[in-house]
Amino acid sequence: MLSINSIKNGIVIDHIKAGTGFSIFKYLGLNNVNYPVALIINAKSKRYGQKDMIKIENSINLDYGVLGFIDPQITINVIENEKIKEKVNLRLPNNVEGIIECKNPRCITANERNPKHKFELIDEEQGKYKCQYCEQVYSWEK
Ligand SMILES: [Zn+2]
Image (cartoon, rainbow, N blue to C red; front, side, top):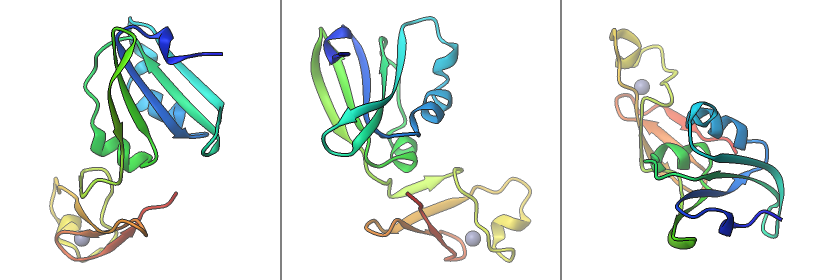
C-alpha cells in the first residue's frame, strides 16, 4: 500500500477523478522532470470508489485555479518532513482566463487578434461561467 509517508517533502494531489490523473500529470509536465514523481491510477477511495493520485517529491508551484477548473474535487496535501503541513480542498475558481474560449461569434474575443478569454463563475452548483465581454454562458462538465 502506498502511503503519504513515502514522501518526505513535496506534494500529494489526492482525490483526482479516476481517469483524469494522466492528463493532470502531463499538464504539470511531470513526465519530464528529474525528481521522483508517481502517478497512481484507480486507487481505492472511500468517497468516490476509485480515484487517481499524483505524488511529487519536490516543492513546485501549482496553479490551484487551473487545477480546480480541471477537477474541483481535488485535495492538495503539502508534505513537509513526512507530515501534512497544509491541506487545500480545491473548488471551481471564480475567474478563469485563457482556459476556455467564448463560442459566441459576435463576441469581441472572436474578432480581436489575440483575445484574452475571461470567464466568471456565476453558478458554482451547476458549474456555470459567463463570458466577461458578452455574457455567453459556458457550462462546466464533470
Ligand atoms: Zn464572449
